[in-house]
Image (cartoon, rainbow, N blue to C red; front, side, top):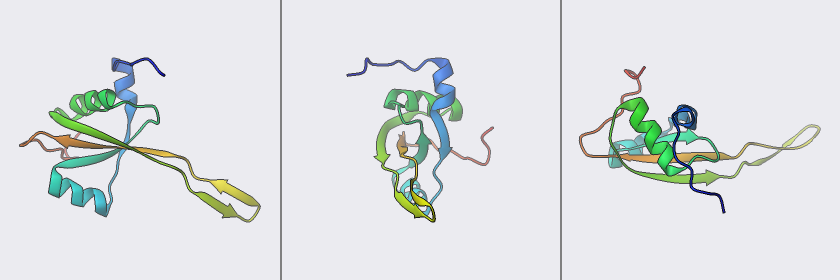
Length: 104
């Protein structure tokens, strides 16, 4: 079992990879005030929470993580595989909002 890791300032800057912009994530954002992000494979909930609060200056209520296994694909010269993906669904406290257009 891995020891519990605290969110160091250097690590916080690397945890978030990209926001997930899809029809499903937009619907979840409007309905539940949640936002989806691609994160590092070994990222923890505490690290994701610290990163969101640092970058976007909002208060995070909860973080849910999901692992998605990469699909196997056939190519002309054999079988390949897409990479695995880890997503974080971040719930914000009421009254909080992330606007990706204004964030720098």
